[in-house]
Image (cartoon, rainbow, N blue to C red):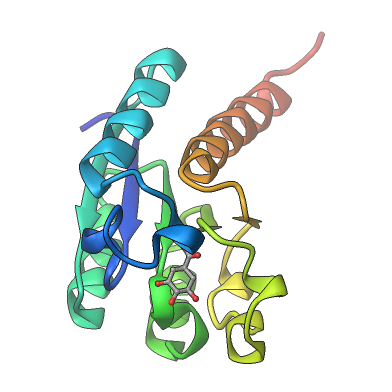
Length: 156
Ligand code: DQA
């Protein structure tokens, strides 16, 4: 795969989008969210590989695997956001730019959701914009990469 591909990771319980706490997470199913992400990727001219897992180790394996092909990672770690030192370590280990996404605004919810173990391993965080958050995150990664590439080109 070329360097123009991005990994999009959905953590635990996000397979139940559209039926789970819809007043917080919205009515869109995971398939609908994924097709929104695919549309944005096409618009941006990049590829995405989208993975959902309810298992911490599988998410870590996907992050490790991304080392060999991805230009960056969009990750909604679900509840692992608040607990997983292992996910944080994996993101730091692979040294790929990552953006943390939450459908809900975790900062106006329960106190335990207001702490993110992975935030410090990411270049930024987008929370509270529903499914659009994934698209915003992908745009941010792609534009950051373009800006970095342009900076490397000598001006004279
Ligand atoms: C979530 C927020 C988490 O606190 C929660 O455990 C989730 C979803 C979000 O997208 O808003 O599963 O990551």
